[in-house]
Length: 412
Image (cartoon, rainbow, N blue to C red; front, side, top):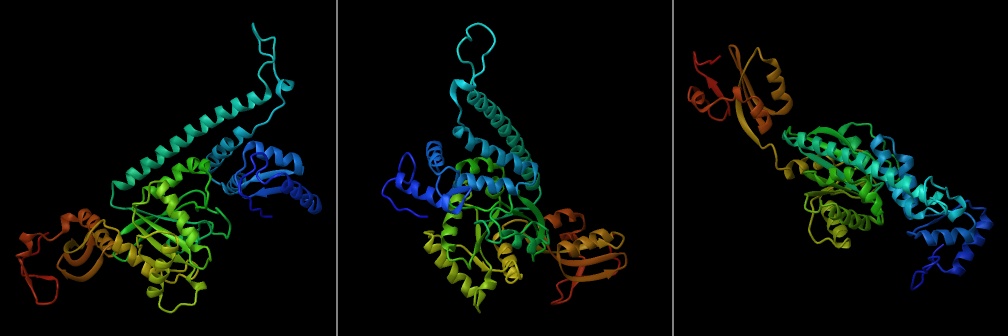
């Protein structure tokens, strides 16, 4: 049912006539719950329930119920319980002195602490404990990020509206087994996996909880530790269900939430997912046109690089990797020559794994390898990098790109 009215009714949100109409519909359908797509005050919720005679939940409580059914890890359960208790606290009802308890000692002849007051006190204590537990989780995540930052392996976070296909794309990119389902908030806890870019540089890809319009404030506070994974990322892959008619609305909402958590200045790539549902031929041209249209409809004037992909079929992932490689400014790649002893097979294998080998030659007990290597690899094998002094002892053939050893110049 829908209603359009100039002002919200303070007592029942809709007005008494509409509430009576809802009551009749509940009786006709034998409904056991009424869900209202608005936030209700405790008074409005009680007044509507007293008239319709069945359970009434609002938008926030529905989202909390969905979150509770999705929580699997200890952290997820802590976050959901904290949000639920903060929502429940102002909605507690009691029966005054009828359920009061007399306290011991002088001056307690009158009504003692009521059951309502006891419940409120216990919930307050529980909220305080949960907040401390989540603060420890937050400090632990900050410590993990600090350790990750000590090595040149940046984190790239997937963000987007719920059910945009983030987990499916995450599984396709990382070969992980994260739950991917066409359900709201199927992913609550962030999952991090390493992937290798075309330049052979490594990054950490993080899958996070999906966003939704009018996300309750209690959820933003409870999931602060999770959302910080997005805020601290070096790059955000903003995943959009390009086949949805409300894609521009979803883009606007995600951009708003990113600004709210302090991630508006983080570089973004607009990942236009589910392109397998579109009839397009030129993926690059279509991506630019769709991105401009979506951002314009969302009221976002700053252009963003865009890529059309399909997490289901894997189409466009090569272009996405190239785009990530071009935007991330870390672990610079340079072409260098390594002199690796043949006895050190582990270093040779590492060069082939982490670098792009251009040419390889052998002389005696040394392998000469010309490699496009990231800075982290050059630092790790810096003892084998051919220096200026050594370079003068090597004769070059035009166009080979690799110094050839002269007689007796092998340096063990």
